[in-house]
Amino acid sequence: MKLSILDQAPVSANMSVSEALHNSVKLAVLGDELGYTRFWLAEHHGMAGLSSSAPEVTLGGIGMLTENIRLGSGATLLPYYKPYKVAEVFNTLATLYGDRIDIGIGRAPGGDNKASEALSDNYLQHVFKMPELVSELKVFINNDDESLEPKPVPDSPPQLWMLGTSEKSAMFARDNNMNYCFGKFMSGSDPLNVLSTYREHSAGGEVIITVNVFCHEDDKTARQLAYSYAVNQALKSNGRAFKGVPSDEEMADIELTAEEKEETDNILSNLITGTPDKVKEELTELSEAYQADEFMIVTITHNIEDKLNSYRLLADCILKQQ
Image 1: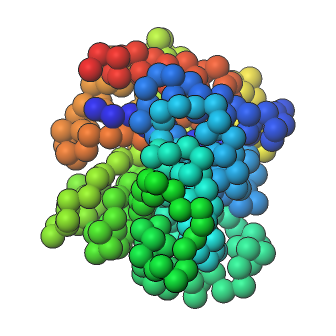
Image 2: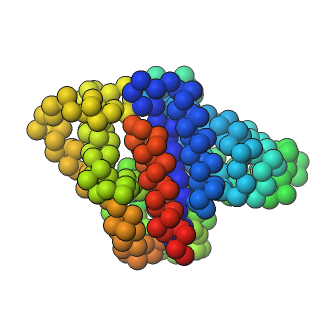
C-alpha cells in the first residue's frame, strides 16, 4: 500500500500564516524521510484558515529540501489559468527536480465569489471549456506542438491527474485518459459508484483515494483530535468557525446546536481515527473494497506536532512493514 500526503497549509488559532506555510515545508520534508509517495499542496483563495493560494511557489522551495517524494498541486484550478502558463510553471519544477512532479487538475472555485471574480472575469465559461483546457495542457506537457514549446522542456514531463469528488469528475478523467484522484474526505458520493464509473471502459489509469486520518498512540487522543476538526468544520455552515484550527481548550467552551451536533457526527463518520494498528486495518479494508493501492492522507490538527506524529506513526506501521 502506498501512502501520500495532501496538505492545505492550515492556519491554527493564534498562528501566523508564515508559520503555517513553514509547517507545510516541515511536513513535506518529513514525508520524504518517511517514504511517502507524494506531497501535494491544495490551492485555495481568500479562505480563512488556509494559507496555500499559490502551491507552485511553495513547492519550489520544498523541492530544494527533498530528494525522492513526488511534489504536486492538489489541485491547480485550471479554469483560472491559461494551459500554456501552467505548463511553463510545472515544466520549470520538473526541470529543477526531475521525474517527481505532478499536476493535479481541478475545476472548483477554491474560494468565495469575490475571490473567484478577482481571479477571473469568466470563471464559469472556462469551467464549461474544461475539455479544451485539459486537451491544450496535455499537448503542452507532452511537447506535441513544436511551434509553441512551453520552456523549459524537462527530460521527464510532469504527470497529470484529475481530482474530483463525483461520478462526473470520474467520467471526465476516464474519457480524457487521465489518472484519477477521488477526494473521499470531502465527498458525499459513494466511492464504489465513482470508481466503477472511472474504470468502466477505462484505459487503466492510476487511482488515488484521499481520506482524513487522525492517528495517535492513544485511541482516545486520536478521537479528540478528530472531534476538534469535525466540530470546526460543522461550525462553518453557520458562520461560527474559528479563524484558525482551534485548540482543545477553545473547543471546550463551544456549545453546539442540535444541527451542529448532527453535522459533527456526519463528519466524524467519514474520518479514520485511532491507533496505528486500527488505522492500518481500516485502510486495508478500504484498499480491498475499492481496489486502490494508494491513499492520500489529510490530517489537520491545532498542534503541528500532533500532525507530524500522526504521519510518523502511519509510516512506521504501514510503510516500514512492507
